[in-house]
Image (cartoon, rainbow, N blue to C red; front, side):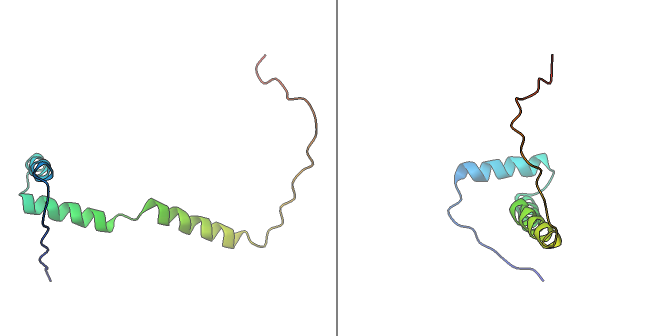
Length: 81
């Protein structure tokens, strides 16, 4: 099933850039725009992926009891001498 989308008021510079991109990729302008839209709609957003991973981590580690070691007031050690 296909649909028609009309986009109005596209800046001339944007249209030219899309035309150049289409030529570089060996596609028509319409095919290039279709490819751009398909890619944009199918790529998961990094923010939502990271949010989901953080939520899963919190859920999996909710029952763990973390004990932090006591802090020692020692002067910092020199790593490179």
